[in-house]
Length: 431
Image (cartoon, rainbow, N blue to C red; front, top):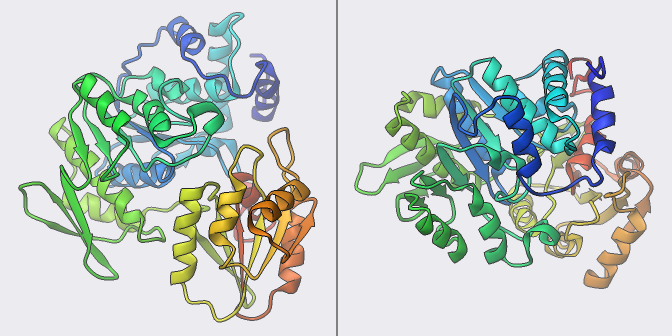
């Protein structure tokens, strides 16, 4: 084995390939073939792509499947506090040893083929799930779909969540172009669920060319809010079912949940046993860190949210408006260079009393001054300060905040991670 610890493996992987992002399936396919793997995995597979709602949809799907009694693997990215979060079985992150062993097998199989950090992770997830004999796995696409490493494996059901503008340098600068990339996860004559009522035509056209049965919101199934505690889901031609709100904040989570229920109905058609009780329990007990996660700090409310694009900011604006706040709202914002910070700030500027801009480390991280300059150019802000680190910005926001105020910490997984690492609510000893 090349390395004995997970941190050693990860540090090496970060520098192994000439670039952090390198879309394409040729290299990873060769390595998987050398590992005697088939693109059709020996367990049921749900693949989830989209711009927003992927993490929530993975969490709800896997929670329902676990409630139904199935050994369930989940592969997600990025992680918040520990790499192991990316590869989990029945909600429990895999151990360092499991991941290191998988890395060693991948390293042996690759020969002189170079792999990215994400490609190593994807192969490790598939290998671990195969060895652990999971019943079903739910895989989250990292970026796009067509050329994403996750798309190496043939899915049994594809789910495509709402599509917005993100990763435009790689995926295109319109919804149509991005949807074409996302639709790449669709397999011939394999069902695809679309959570948007009006998805881009490129997605619909790709499904048609693949002869893939399309289950679109508003057409194959309908959903509606009933009251603060429940909503209804109905497949076309069938009786409506009353379900509890998913245990995730935001009315928009019903859109994600409705698509997940449709996925479960299709899994039932493919032979799985998923009762209404399993769906109910899965929705009631789902948990996902960093999605409008509220934490009380003395008399101030902290809100942790990984939102980093326009569509997510619109959802965040709605949530901030709906949640009663007697005091002021301060924002600690740090983002990556390739994100549309202008749109995010424009959408939220009326919600924020004062901005605390922070820098993020690494080649992709944006420094606070650049973030402020972009904010000023698009929104003419003057209610802000700049700080080198997220922790620095947070400490100054905390000093400024008074009773009943709230501090929104958002803009990236890295932003949320930085604050989680200093909060006592998160036990890092077990991470």
